[in-house]
Length: 262
Image (cartoon, rainbow, N blue to C red; front, side, top):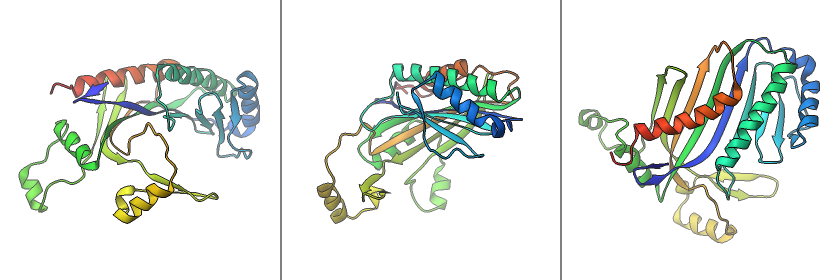
């Protein structure tokens, strides 16, 4: 997907179902986890300590994370450091949502749902933060009057927007803002994350000299478009259809809303 000469990267996808009367989780959590592990060997426990609050699992096939509790279940897949989330990975994610959610719904006897949603994060890479802000401003998604800017004494340095738009089949919350990838320093026992723009020139040079060369597909500076497509109090749910249609529909609507030739 191209928007004003920039190709997007699908950075992260999150799928979540919230529900009422899921307290059978406290009685059936272990049985539910066993059913998932036995029927789908790709899943393993992310932590040995399953608690009354949650039960986290992770897929060894694609590092998809899954967690469920007495009030919600959540799936998440994120762009690896040196790869892309391609169409085959999305298909796998959709199948994981379908198979695992069906087990949880059956074991917890879930019948009343309060929310179903798919959240999609797109990144548009740039060389620096200035390019990011210029690109966001040129999209024409929002504008500020000269009177507003002069009242505060200067131009906009960082800008973003958040919108909630009720659609016919689902509601959309769209956020647009600039992001910076954090630099990571490995101390062995812990990893420190910090912004390179907060470093002095000397600190940046020292950091680059001491850190090994790595190839990352995620840009250091990017514009992020975050689309949360959700439906509250659904009468019935089809997780597989909802997550796949939300991804396809959000991309189509985004391209229609912000065309490359504007």
